[in-house]
Amino acid sequence: MFKTPEELLKYLKDESVEFVDIRFCDLIGQMQHFNVPAHAFTEDAFTVGMMFDGSSVRGFQAINESDMKLLPDVKSAFIDPFRINKTLALNFNVVDPFTDEPYSRDPRNVAVKAEKFLAASGIADTAFFAPEAEFYIFDSVRYQTRPNGSMYEVDSIEAAWNMGKEQEADGGPNLGYKTRYKGGYFPTGPNDQFTDLRDEMVRTLEAVGLEVERAHHEVGTAGQAEINYRFNTLLQAADDVQKFKYVIKNVAWENGKTVTFMPKPIFGDNGSGMHCHQSLWSGGKPLFYDEAGYAGLSDLARWYIGGLLKHAPSLLAFTNPSVNSFHRLVPGYEAPVNLVYSARNRSACIRIPITGTSPKAKRIEFRVPDPTSNPYLAFSAMLMAGLDGIKNRYEPPAPVDKDLYELPPEEAKNVPQVPGSLTEVLDALEKDNDYLTAGGVFTPDLIETWVEYKRKNEVDAIRFRPHPYEFEMYYDC
Image: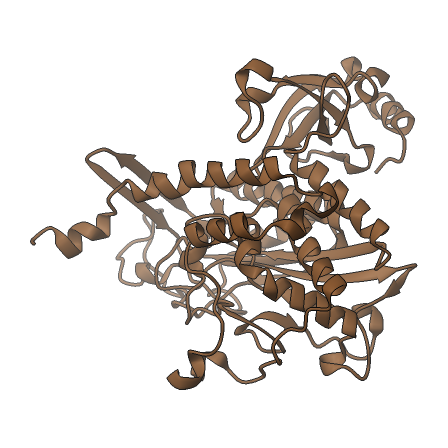
Protein backbone atom coordinates (compact mmCIF):
# COMPACT_ATOMS: atom_id res chain seq x y z
CA MET A 1 0.00 0.00 0.00
CA PHE A 2 2.94 2.31 0.80
CA LYS A 3 6.66 2.34 0.05
CA THR A 4 7.84 5.06 2.43
CA PRO A 5 6.89 6.49 5.82
CA GLU A 6 6.20 9.81 4.13
CA GLU A 7 3.57 8.23 1.88
CA LEU A 8 1.87 6.63 4.86
CA LEU A 9 1.83 9.81 6.96
CA LYS A 10 0.46 11.82 4.04
CA TYR A 11 -2.29 9.23 3.54
CA LEU A 12 -3.35 9.50 7.18
CA LYS A 13 -3.99 13.22 6.74
CA ASP A 14 -5.37 13.22 3.19
CA GLU A 15 -7.83 10.36 3.79
CA SER A 16 -8.98 11.44 7.26
CA VAL A 17 -7.81 8.24 8.95
CA GLU A 18 -8.75 8.37 12.64
CA PHE A 19 -6.69 5.56 14.16
CA VAL A 20 -3.58 3.48 13.48
CA ASP A 21 -3.77 -0.12 14.70
CA ILE A 22 -0.35 -1.31 15.87
CA ARG A 23 -0.03 -5.07 15.26
CA PHE A 24 2.65 -7.65 15.99
CA CYS A 25 2.76 -11.42 16.43
CA ASP A 26 3.45 -13.35 19.62
CA LEU A 27 5.66 -16.42 19.56
CA ILE A 28 2.75 -18.86 19.27
CA GLY A 29 1.17 -17.10 16.28
CA GLN A 30 -1.58 -14.87 17.70
CA MET A 31 -1.64 -11.30 16.42
CA GLN A 32 -1.57 -8.65 19.17
CA HIS A 33 -2.65 -5.03 18.81
CA PHE A 34 -3.22 -1.63 20.31
CA ASN A 35 -4.33 1.52 18.56
CA VAL A 36 -3.30 5.17 18.65
CA PRO A 37 -5.07 8.24 17.26
CA ALA A 38 -3.79 9.00 13.78
CA HIS A 39 -2.75 12.52 14.81
CA ALA A 40 -0.41 10.98 17.41
CA PHE A 41 1.24 8.68 14.87
CA THR A 42 4.19 10.74 13.61
CA GLU A 43 7.59 10.21 12.02
CA ASP A 44 8.85 9.27 15.50
CA ALA A 45 7.05 5.93 15.13
CA PHE A 46 9.61 4.99 12.46
CA THR A 47 12.68 6.04 14.46
CA VAL A 48 11.89 6.17 18.17
CA GLY A 49 9.33 3.36 17.81
CA MET A 50 6.46 2.28 20.07
CA MET A 51 7.18 0.77 23.50
CA PHE A 52 5.29 -2.14 25.08
CA ASP A 53 5.49 -4.66 27.92
CA GLY A 54 7.11 -7.81 26.53
CA SER A 55 6.50 -9.81 29.72
CA SER A 56 2.75 -9.82 29.03
CA VAL A 57 3.15 -11.46 25.60
CA ARG A 58 3.34 -15.25 25.23
CA GLY A 59 6.88 -16.48 24.68
CA PHE A 60 8.55 -13.08 25.02
CA GLN A 61 10.40 -11.44 27.92
CA ALA A 62 10.72 -12.00 31.67
CA ILE A 63 9.21 -9.32 33.91
CA ASN A 64 12.63 -8.01 35.02
CA GLU A 65 13.54 -7.06 31.42
CA SER A 66 10.11 -6.51 29.95
CA ASP A 67 10.49 -3.28 27.95
CA MET A 68 10.47 -3.89 24.21
CA LYS A 69 10.14 -1.68 21.14
CA LEU A 70 8.12 -1.91 17.93
CA LEU A 71 9.12 -0.54 14.52
CA PRO A 72 6.62 -0.46 11.62
CA ASP A 73 6.73 -2.09 8.19
CA VAL A 74 5.01 0.43 5.89
CA LYS A 75 4.46 -2.20 3.18
CA SER A 76 2.09 -4.17 5.43
CA ALA A 77 -0.56 -1.45 5.84
CA PHE A 78 -4.25 -1.91 5.04
CA ILE A 79 -7.54 -0.29 6.02
CA ASP A 80 -9.32 -2.43 8.62
CA PRO A 81 -12.78 -3.17 7.16
CA PHE A 82 -14.31 -4.03 10.54
CA ARG A 83 -13.63 -0.88 12.54
CA ILE A 84 -16.38 1.72 12.93
CA ASN A 85 -13.84 4.54 12.77
CA LYS A 86 -11.48 4.61 9.79
CA THR A 87 -8.41 2.68 10.92
CA LEU A 88 -5.13 1.84 9.21
CA ALA A 89 -3.68 -1.49 10.39
CA LEU A 90 0.08 -1.86 10.30
CA ASN A 91 2.43 -4.74 11.16
CA PHE A 92 5.43 -4.03 13.37
CA ASN A 93 8.68 -5.84 14.12
CA VAL A 94 9.97 -6.22 17.68
CA VAL A 95 13.43 -4.84 18.47
CA ASP A 96 15.65 -4.39 21.50
CA PRO A 97 14.83 -1.01 23.09
CA PHE A 98 18.51 -0.16 23.63
CA THR A 99 20.22 -1.42 20.49
CA ASP A 100 17.38 -1.66 17.94
CA GLU A 101 18.62 -5.17 17.15
CA PRO A 102 15.84 -7.46 15.88
CA TYR A 103 14.36 -9.46 18.75
CA SER A 104 15.19 -13.13 18.19
CA ARG A 105 11.83 -14.42 19.47
CA ASP A 106 9.79 -12.14 17.20
CA PRO A 107 8.37 -14.51 14.55
CA ARG A 108 8.28 -11.78 11.92
CA ASN A 109 12.00 -11.13 12.43
CA VAL A 110 12.64 -14.84 11.82
CA ALA A 111 10.88 -14.57 8.46
CA VAL A 112 12.95 -11.49 7.57
CA LYS A 113 16.15 -13.37 8.43
CA ALA A 114 15.04 -16.41 6.42
CA GLU A 115 14.59 -14.29 3.30
CA LYS A 116 18.01 -12.68 3.82
CA PHE A 117 19.58 -16.10 4.32
CA LEU A 118 18.06 -17.29 1.05
CA ALA A 119 19.37 -14.25 -0.83
CA ALA A 120 22.87 -14.81 0.58
CA SER A 121 22.85 -18.53 -0.18
CA GLY A 122 23.58 -18.18 -3.89
CA ILE A 123 20.84 -20.73 -4.57
CA ALA A 124 17.90 -18.39 -5.15
CA ASP A 125 16.77 -14.90 -4.25
CA THR A 126 13.02 -15.41 -3.77
CA ALA A 127 10.82 -18.04 -2.13
CA PHE A 128 7.13 -18.03 -2.96
CA PHE A 129 4.53 -19.57 -0.65
CA ALA A 130 0.84 -20.20 -1.27
CA PRO A 131 -0.87 -21.59 1.85
CA GLU A 132 -4.38 -23.04 1.75
CA ALA A 133 -5.87 -22.69 5.23
CA GLU A 134 -9.11 -24.64 5.62
CA PHE A 135 -11.67 -23.82 8.30
CA TYR A 136 -15.07 -24.76 9.74
CA ILE A 137 -18.06 -22.40 10.01
CA PHE A 138 -20.25 -23.19 13.03
CA ASP A 139 -23.49 -21.71 14.33
CA SER A 140 -22.42 -22.18 17.93
CA VAL A 141 -19.63 -23.52 20.10
CA ARG A 142 -19.50 -24.36 23.82
CA TYR A 143 -16.54 -25.67 25.78
CA GLN A 144 -15.49 -25.76 29.41
CA THR A 145 -12.97 -27.50 31.63
CA ARG A 146 -13.25 -27.84 35.40
CA PRO A 147 -11.54 -30.08 37.96
CA ASN A 148 -14.67 -32.27 38.07
CA GLY A 149 -15.75 -32.16 34.44
CA SER A 150 -15.11 -31.04 30.90
CA MET A 151 -17.14 -30.73 27.70
CA TYR A 152 -17.30 -29.24 24.23
CA GLU A 153 -20.02 -29.02 21.61
CA VAL A 154 -20.13 -27.42 18.18
CA ASP A 155 -23.22 -27.14 16.00
CA SER A 156 -24.08 -26.17 12.44
CA ILE A 157 -27.40 -25.89 10.65
CA GLU A 158 -26.04 -28.01 7.79
CA ALA A 159 -24.34 -30.68 9.91
CA ALA A 160 -25.09 -34.36 9.32
CA TRP A 161 -25.93 -34.91 12.99
CA ASN A 162 -28.94 -32.56 12.63
CA MET A 163 -30.73 -34.68 10.01
CA GLY A 164 -33.14 -36.09 12.60
CA LYS A 165 -34.02 -32.84 14.36
CA GLU A 166 -37.67 -31.79 14.19
CA GLN A 167 -36.86 -28.09 14.13
CA GLU A 168 -33.99 -25.88 13.10
CA ALA A 169 -32.35 -23.58 15.64
CA ASP A 170 -34.57 -20.69 14.48
CA GLY A 171 -37.72 -22.67 15.36
CA GLY A 172 -38.65 -23.42 11.77
CA PRO A 173 -39.12 -26.93 10.38
CA ASN A 174 -36.17 -29.09 9.40
CA LEU A 175 -35.94 -28.69 5.61
CA GLY A 176 -33.22 -31.29 5.11
CA TYR A 177 -30.26 -30.86 2.76
CA LYS A 178 -27.75 -31.58 5.48
CA THR A 179 -24.18 -32.28 4.40
CA ARG A 180 -23.17 -35.92 4.86
CA TYR A 181 -19.99 -36.80 6.71
CA LYS A 182 -17.09 -36.45 4.26
CA GLY A 183 -19.64 -35.42 1.60
CA GLY A 184 -19.27 -31.65 1.44
CA TYR A 185 -16.90 -31.23 -1.50
CA PHE A 186 -18.43 -28.96 -4.18
CA PRO A 187 -22.24 -29.50 -3.86
CA THR A 188 -24.45 -26.63 -4.97
CA GLY A 189 -27.18 -25.11 -2.82
CA PRO A 190 -29.27 -25.83 -0.89
CA ASN A 191 -26.74 -28.43 0.31
CA ASP A 192 -24.06 -25.74 0.37
CA GLN A 193 -25.62 -23.24 2.75
CA PHE A 194 -22.62 -20.93 3.03
CA THR A 195 -22.13 -19.66 -0.52
CA ASP A 196 -23.26 -16.11 0.28
CA LEU A 197 -21.15 -15.98 3.44
CA ARG A 198 -18.06 -17.11 1.54
CA ASP A 199 -18.82 -14.50 -1.13
CA GLU A 200 -18.76 -11.82 1.56
CA MET A 201 -15.48 -13.24 2.85
CA VAL A 202 -14.03 -13.07 -0.67
CA ARG A 203 -15.12 -9.46 -1.17
CA THR A 204 -13.59 -8.46 2.15
CA LEU A 205 -10.35 -10.34 1.48
CA GLU A 206 -9.95 -8.53 -1.82
CA ALA A 207 -10.70 -5.21 -0.13
CA VAL A 208 -7.68 -5.72 2.16
CA GLY A 209 -5.38 -6.65 -0.72
CA LEU A 210 -5.58 -10.43 -1.18
CA GLU A 211 -6.12 -11.66 -4.74
CA VAL A 212 -8.66 -14.46 -4.34
CA GLU A 213 -8.60 -17.28 -6.89
CA ARG A 214 -11.45 -19.56 -5.73
CA ALA A 215 -13.77 -20.35 -2.83
CA HIS A 216 -15.69 -23.55 -2.13
CA HIS A 217 -17.21 -25.89 0.42
CA GLU A 218 -14.68 -28.46 1.62
CA VAL A 219 -15.20 -32.17 2.28
CA GLY A 220 -16.34 -31.93 5.89
CA THR A 221 -19.90 -31.54 7.08
CA ALA A 222 -20.85 -28.56 9.26
CA GLY A 223 -19.58 -25.87 6.92
CA GLN A 224 -15.97 -26.78 6.22
CA ALA A 225 -14.61 -24.29 3.69
CA GLU A 226 -11.56 -23.26 1.72
CA ILE A 227 -10.74 -19.95 0.06
CA ASN A 228 -7.57 -19.76 -2.02
CA TYR A 229 -5.67 -16.59 -2.83
CA ARG A 230 -2.56 -15.76 -4.83
CA PHE A 231 0.94 -16.71 -3.66
CA ASN A 232 3.41 -14.22 -2.22
CA THR A 233 6.99 -13.95 -1.00
CA LEU A 234 7.72 -15.63 2.33
CA LEU A 235 7.29 -12.67 4.70
CA GLN A 236 4.31 -11.25 2.84
CA ALA A 237 2.71 -14.70 2.55
CA ALA A 238 2.92 -15.03 6.34
CA ASP A 239 1.39 -11.56 6.73
CA ASP A 240 -1.34 -12.68 4.33
CA VAL A 241 -2.19 -15.71 6.48
CA GLN A 242 -2.67 -13.51 9.54
CA LYS A 243 -4.78 -11.08 7.53
CA PHE A 244 -6.76 -13.97 6.03
CA LYS A 245 -7.63 -15.48 9.42
CA TYR A 246 -8.57 -12.06 10.79
CA VAL A 247 -10.97 -11.41 7.91
CA ILE A 248 -12.54 -14.89 7.91
CA LYS A 249 -13.21 -14.85 11.66
CA ASN A 250 -14.64 -11.34 11.66
CA VAL A 251 -16.90 -11.76 8.62
CA ALA A 252 -18.33 -14.90 10.23
CA TRP A 253 -18.74 -13.11 13.57
CA GLU A 254 -20.60 -10.20 11.96
CA ASN A 255 -22.98 -12.72 10.37
CA GLY A 256 -23.76 -14.56 13.60
CA LYS A 257 -21.40 -17.46 12.87
CA THR A 258 -18.17 -18.63 14.45
CA VAL A 259 -15.10 -19.93 12.60
CA THR A 260 -12.36 -22.25 13.80
CA PHE A 261 -9.07 -23.13 12.12
CA MET A 262 -8.54 -26.08 14.49
CA PRO A 263 -7.06 -29.04 12.58
CA LYS A 264 -9.63 -31.53 13.96
CA PRO A 265 -12.74 -30.03 15.58
CA ILE A 266 -15.06 -32.93 14.62
CA PHE A 267 -14.51 -36.64 15.23
CA GLY A 268 -15.16 -38.85 12.21
CA ASP A 269 -14.84 -36.20 9.52
CA ASN A 270 -12.05 -34.48 7.62
CA GLY A 271 -9.68 -32.17 9.42
CA SER A 272 -8.52 -28.74 8.32
CA GLY A 273 -5.03 -28.44 6.91
CA MET A 274 -2.92 -25.64 5.50
CA HIS A 275 -1.29 -27.15 2.43
CA CYS A 276 1.70 -25.01 1.45
CA HIS A 277 2.66 -24.62 -2.20
CA GLN A 278 6.22 -23.35 -2.56
CA SER A 279 8.88 -22.62 -5.16
CA LEU A 280 12.26 -20.92 -5.50
CA TRP A 281 13.19 -18.27 -8.06
CA SER A 282 16.36 -16.42 -9.03
CA GLY A 283 16.56 -13.25 -11.10
CA GLY A 284 12.90 -13.58 -12.00
CA LYS A 285 13.34 -17.14 -13.28
CA PRO A 286 11.76 -20.29 -11.74
CA LEU A 287 14.15 -22.94 -10.46
CA PHE A 288 11.87 -25.91 -9.85
CA TYR A 289 11.15 -26.86 -13.49
CA ASP A 290 12.97 -29.34 -15.70
CA GLU A 291 11.06 -30.99 -18.53
CA ALA A 292 13.21 -34.11 -18.25
CA GLY A 293 12.68 -34.64 -14.53
CA TYR A 294 10.02 -36.69 -12.76
CA ALA A 295 6.78 -34.66 -12.83
CA GLY A 296 8.75 -31.86 -14.47
CA LEU A 297 10.92 -31.28 -11.40
CA SER A 298 14.47 -29.97 -11.52
CA ASP A 299 17.29 -31.52 -9.48
CA LEU A 300 17.12 -28.50 -7.19
CA ALA A 301 13.41 -29.07 -6.54
CA ARG A 302 14.01 -32.75 -5.85
CA TRP A 303 16.76 -31.94 -3.32
CA TYR A 304 14.46 -29.36 -1.72
CA ILE A 305 11.92 -32.17 -1.28
CA GLY A 306 14.69 -34.34 0.14
CA GLY A 307 15.34 -31.71 2.80
CA LEU A 308 11.66 -31.47 3.76
CA LEU A 309 11.38 -35.25 4.09
CA LYS A 310 14.65 -35.69 5.97
CA HIS A 311 13.79 -33.04 8.54
CA ALA A 312 10.03 -33.70 8.66
CA PRO A 313 9.93 -35.09 12.23
CA SER A 314 11.47 -31.90 13.66
CA LEU A 315 9.93 -29.60 11.05
CA LEU A 316 6.44 -30.61 12.20
CA ALA A 317 7.16 -28.97 15.56
CA PHE A 318 6.59 -25.69 13.69
CA THR A 319 4.18 -26.72 10.92
CA ASN A 320 1.89 -28.83 13.16
CA PRO A 321 2.53 -27.43 16.62
CA SER A 322 -0.58 -28.44 18.57
CA VAL A 323 -1.91 -31.54 20.28
CA ASN A 324 -4.97 -31.25 18.05
CA SER A 325 -2.72 -31.33 14.95
CA PHE A 326 -2.15 -35.04 15.41
CA HIS A 327 -5.85 -35.89 15.59
CA ARG A 328 -5.89 -34.76 11.94
CA LEU A 329 -2.79 -36.69 10.89
CA VAL A 330 -4.41 -40.14 10.82
CA PRO A 331 -5.22 -42.36 7.81
CA GLY A 332 -8.65 -42.25 6.20
CA TYR A 333 -9.43 -38.54 6.03
CA GLU A 334 -7.25 -37.41 3.10
CA ALA A 335 -4.57 -36.59 5.66
CA PRO A 336 -0.96 -36.67 4.38
CA VAL A 337 0.54 -39.15 6.82
CA ASN A 338 3.07 -40.77 4.46
CA LEU A 339 6.55 -39.24 4.24
CA VAL A 340 6.93 -39.67 0.49
CA TYR A 341 6.38 -37.50 -2.58
CA SER A 342 4.30 -38.06 -5.67
CA ALA A 343 2.73 -36.45 -8.70
CA ARG A 344 -1.02 -35.95 -8.14
CA ASN A 345 -1.20 -38.39 -5.20
CA ARG A 346 -2.91 -36.72 -2.23
CA SER A 347 -2.02 -39.54 0.16
CA ALA A 348 1.64 -38.42 -0.02
CA CYS A 349 2.83 -35.62 2.24
CA ILE A 350 4.41 -33.87 -0.75
CA ARG A 351 2.43 -33.61 -3.96
CA ILE A 352 3.56 -32.22 -7.31
CA PRO A 353 0.52 -30.41 -8.73
CA ILE A 354 -0.18 -30.76 -12.43
CA THR A 355 0.70 -27.36 -13.85
CA GLY A 356 1.11 -28.01 -17.57
CA THR A 357 4.31 -27.03 -19.36
CA SER A 358 4.76 -23.58 -17.83
CA PRO A 359 8.03 -23.42 -15.87
CA LYS A 360 6.64 -20.51 -13.85
CA ALA A 361 3.81 -22.64 -12.48
CA LYS A 362 6.01 -25.52 -11.31
CA ARG A 363 5.89 -25.90 -7.55
CA ILE A 364 5.68 -28.46 -4.79
CA GLU A 365 2.85 -28.81 -2.27
CA PHE A 366 3.76 -29.76 1.30
CA ARG A 367 0.42 -31.04 2.58
CA VAL A 368 1.24 -31.66 6.23
CA PRO A 369 0.98 -28.16 7.82
CA ASP A 370 -2.15 -26.92 9.54
CA PRO A 371 -3.48 -23.51 10.60
CA THR A 372 -2.41 -23.79 14.25
CA SER A 373 1.10 -23.04 13.01
CA ASN A 374 2.69 -19.64 13.31
CA PRO A 375 3.09 -18.84 9.58
CA TYR A 376 6.27 -16.79 10.05
CA LEU A 377 7.99 -19.70 11.79
CA ALA A 378 6.43 -22.46 9.69
CA PHE A 379 7.33 -20.92 6.31
CA SER A 380 10.83 -20.08 7.52
CA ALA A 381 11.35 -23.62 8.84
CA MET A 382 10.17 -25.18 5.56
CA LEU A 383 12.50 -22.95 3.57
CA MET A 384 15.46 -23.79 5.82
CA ALA A 385 14.76 -27.53 5.52
CA GLY A 386 14.51 -27.26 1.74
CA LEU A 387 17.71 -25.22 1.45
CA ASP A 388 19.53 -27.75 3.63
CA GLY A 389 18.36 -30.44 1.23
CA ILE A 390 19.72 -28.49 -1.74
CA LYS A 391 23.07 -27.76 -0.10
CA ASN A 392 23.58 -31.39 0.85
CA ARG A 393 21.83 -32.80 -2.23
CA TYR A 394 19.55 -35.03 -0.19
CA GLU A 395 17.84 -37.51 -2.47
CA PRO A 396 14.27 -38.30 -1.40
CA PRO A 397 12.98 -41.88 -1.59
CA ALA A 398 11.60 -42.86 -4.99
CA PRO A 399 8.23 -41.23 -5.74
CA VAL A 400 5.13 -43.31 -5.07
CA ASP A 401 2.22 -42.98 -7.49
CA LYS A 402 -0.11 -45.64 -6.06
CA ASP A 403 -2.79 -45.03 -3.42
CA LEU A 404 -0.83 -45.47 -0.22
CA TYR A 405 -3.99 -46.01 1.81
CA GLU A 406 -4.71 -49.18 -0.20
CA LEU A 407 -1.29 -50.80 0.13
CA PRO A 408 -1.21 -54.34 1.53
CA PRO A 409 0.13 -54.45 5.11
CA GLU A 410 3.50 -55.90 4.10
CA GLU A 411 4.13 -52.91 1.80
CA ALA A 412 2.55 -50.27 4.02
CA LYS A 413 4.86 -51.04 6.95
CA ASN A 414 7.84 -49.93 4.83
CA VAL A 415 6.39 -46.49 4.09
CA PRO A 416 7.69 -43.90 6.58
CA GLN A 417 4.98 -42.07 8.52
CA VAL A 418 4.73 -38.68 10.18
CA PRO A 419 5.23 -38.73 13.97
CA GLY A 420 2.12 -39.43 16.00
CA SER A 421 2.14 -36.71 18.64
CA LEU A 422 3.30 -33.24 19.58
CA THR A 423 5.64 -34.81 22.13
CA GLU A 424 7.41 -36.76 19.39
CA VAL A 425 8.00 -33.76 17.13
CA LEU A 426 9.25 -31.61 20.03
CA ASP A 427 11.70 -34.38 20.95
CA ALA A 428 12.79 -34.50 17.31
CA LEU A 429 13.27 -30.73 17.22
CA GLU A 430 15.63 -30.87 20.20
CA LYS A 431 17.78 -33.40 18.36
CA ASP A 432 17.58 -31.95 14.84
CA ASN A 433 17.76 -28.17 14.56
CA ASP A 434 21.11 -27.28 12.99
CA TYR A 435 19.37 -26.64 9.67
CA LEU A 436 17.17 -24.06 11.42
CA THR A 437 19.96 -22.24 13.26
CA ALA A 438 22.10 -21.91 10.11
CA GLY A 439 22.87 -18.24 9.57
CA GLY A 440 21.18 -17.37 12.87
CA VAL A 441 17.71 -17.55 11.30
CA PHE A 442 16.33 -19.45 14.28
CA THR A 443 18.26 -19.05 17.52
CA PRO A 444 18.83 -21.77 20.14
CA ASP A 445 16.97 -19.50 22.58
CA LEU A 446 13.87 -19.40 20.37
CA ILE A 447 13.89 -23.17 19.88
CA GLU A 448 14.35 -23.83 23.61
CA THR A 449 11.59 -21.35 24.47
CA TRP A 450 9.26 -22.93 21.89
CA VAL A 451 9.82 -26.46 23.18
CA GLU A 452 9.46 -25.43 26.82
CA TYR A 453 6.27 -23.45 26.16
CA LYS A 454 4.65 -26.23 24.13
CA ARG A 455 5.47 -28.93 26.68
CA LYS A 456 4.32 -26.96 29.70
CA ASN A 457 1.26 -25.17 28.30
CA GLU A 458 -0.06 -27.70 25.79
CA VAL A 459 1.35 -31.23 26.16
CA ASP A 460 1.25 -31.30 29.97
CA ALA A 461 -1.96 -29.28 30.16
CA ILE A 462 -3.76 -32.07 28.32
CA ARG A 463 -1.71 -34.97 29.73
CA PHE A 464 -2.68 -34.07 33.29
CA ARG A 465 -6.43 -33.92 32.59
CA PRO A 466 -8.76 -36.92 32.17
CA HIS A 467 -10.66 -36.98 28.88
CA PRO A 468 -14.48 -37.40 28.88
CA TYR A 469 -14.18 -40.50 26.69
CA GLU A 470 -12.10 -42.18 29.38
CA PHE A 471 -15.25 -42.29 31.54
CA GLU A 472 -17.09 -44.12 28.77
CA MET A 473 -14.28 -46.65 28.53
CA TYR A 474 -13.23 -47.06 32.14
CA TYR A 475 -15.82 -45.77 34.63
CA ASP A 476 -17.32 -49.22 35.26
CA CYS A 477 -13.97 -50.91 35.77
